[in-house]
Length: 324
Image 1 (cartoon, rainbow, N blue to C red):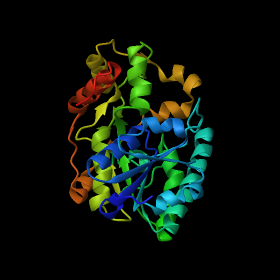
Image 2 (cartoon, rainbow, N blue to C red):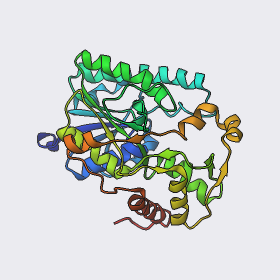
Image 3 (cartoon, rainbow, N blue to C red):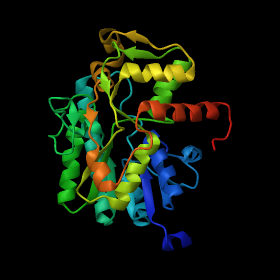
Image 4 (cartoon, rainbow, N blue to C red):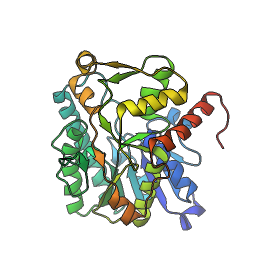
């Protein structure tokens, strides 16, 4: 069917469009005049798409079955990870096996985008790079040695680089820990906290760096508009904090008691040593490059500015009050 908007609006296919980052990216693109398509696993997922996003049913592992959707767009934004990966207790060996699987999936997606001669933006994360002596990461740093989520990036980033050398027009956008609706923040923190089931890993003194989902989303859009193929961009708010500061503020805004700290050694048998490491290690993130080259600036410069907005929207959704 002929779509008249294709004459004037850039088409973007978002992989992971119902997730925490992908849904925010989809929403931001729609609001800024893009035609947005979202890859979904099945018909039931269609209801979770952001307003005006057109659902495309497909398996992330089989891009050859939905490559006509790639053909109909100019850009593919990959914020997706298969839902069956990352479940249950995770040893380092299991994390490495899953990283190998992610690398294979990424290779197939890159092949499909490259053969269609489309552009691609891929999501790694702030742990793509090895922190310096002061705990900061920048785009000119060495590839991660493999601590925490860095294991995944250590396996997948070389695949991405090889594809770019083959001619794939692509860049990566790499946010710090993203807080917003859905994802780890809602399902792993907000809801458990309301039920009195949330805990803090260790003493909460671990340095962490965060970014509001809406600010991450604008970074992806500006990468489409101003980014250079071959580049990589880090995104984070203006000030690192600690896990304890973050959860204490969330509890205050929700009006519930702070989560109880649990020693890491007690949670390791339950979560696996890699999960404990992955959720307690995050470098401080220097996003100067994105600010200077993309023209990106976070609207919420600190967690004190961003968390009240996100939690207010979460409360409204539970009361079924429309968000203005």
